[in-house]
Amino acid sequence: MVGRFARIPPGCGELASPNIRSHEAMTNNPPAPSLKTPRSADSLTQVLGKSERVRDIVEECADDLSSVNTELKRELQDGDVSPGVENAIEKSEAVETKVQDASEVLSAVNSELKEEVRERHILEAHLLSVSKQGDDARHASLHDPLTGLPNRALFSDRLEHGLAVANRNGLHFSVMFLDLDDFKMINDTYGHDVGDVVLQTVAGRLKETTRDDDTVCRYGGDEFLYILMGAESEHDIATVAEKIINAVQVPCAIRVRDIDISLSINPSIGISVFPKDGTTSGALLDMADKAMYRAKRSKAGYAFASAD
Image (tube, rainbow, N blue to C red; front, side, top):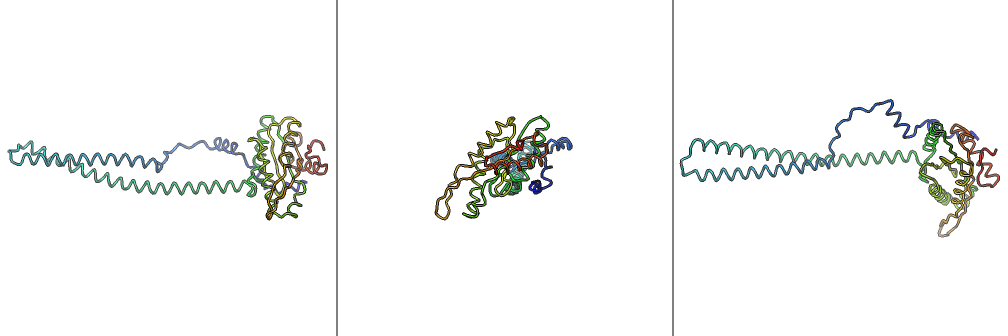
């Protein structure tokens, strides 16, 4: 029986859960001084809007100054102009030139800002795409492609995390090893496409019967594993096992080559309990596996490892 679990990747059981990893990272690597976050494209767009409003004001001031200076010159053309007035007009014209220059500079700056906003939008879209691809790749590496359930690697991580929490807080939890009876006959009779639909249907029913704190995974083939956290008594665990059996046994309505068929699936479940049946992931899985075969032979539906 031990050989069945040699297939679990050797490093998977040593993976820390996300909470454990983040705690270790904070303990061993104090947070670095925070750096100013670069402005996003939306933030730069707001800055650009403010800058364009300022440019409009400056242009209006330049136009107003130009009009005033023109009017002053017209009114003073025919009269005697004192040196002080001439000096004031010269200064006003100089201010007009500076305001016009500032308006041109602002226009150039705004053009550069517009280009920066455009490039930032492109960059953010690219980063979002790369981030999504990374998330998709991580999800694919930790989930079964057929059923969408966690795979062995993620299950091993969750199981090790459950062991750590249970040891630290003196809690109990159980591991259920579920196998579908006579599943090979379904593949041989109706084909693997039908078998895949059955597996997807069973996976969906298992997800519906699990709580947020629990984990169900497809171990391989027609085998599934389930971590049930917090159940203290065998009666409570048995109640969950019976609920799973009843959910799986509901006939699967499948259409095969324009023919509707109804398939009833019977699961066999082996149950090991921490710490009574083992204190390591390997021991708990091995004991649940043995109990599953005993349940299959006896047609009892489920069996506890402690009953051996």
